[in-house]
Length: 159
Image (cartoon, rainbow, N blue to C red; front, side, top):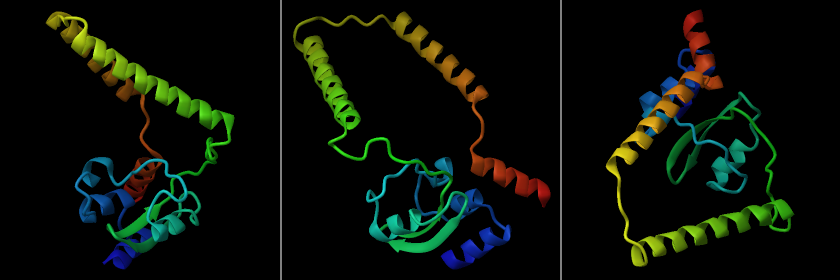
């Protein structure tokens, strides 16, 4: 079935996004269209990882089987990792900042639970939530569709 789906994608009969929406067994695939974001080499299943890192941007590969099922892979973009080694000062600083943030969060939670009474002002929370909702709405109006969405729209217009 995966071979047939890949042939339909390669021939332009089916877009990758539509294939994901129609055939993926992953529950959240219908909302994220199978996009998993940036991945690091060695972070996935070995066969899937090998396929992913042999593809060029825009190239569709597979099918390849993993313990999670069968996969078709579309690489949208590639970039070098900015933190590959623990010996790198940038990596160490990023880890240190994360640890400090985690400790500060725990300290703050401890203060709130054990040292100070917490007063909740519903009108302030409501105002903050409304401001955040407005910010997200404005941001979504400015955002551009992904390259895959644009390619799918162009193919649909051509058909």
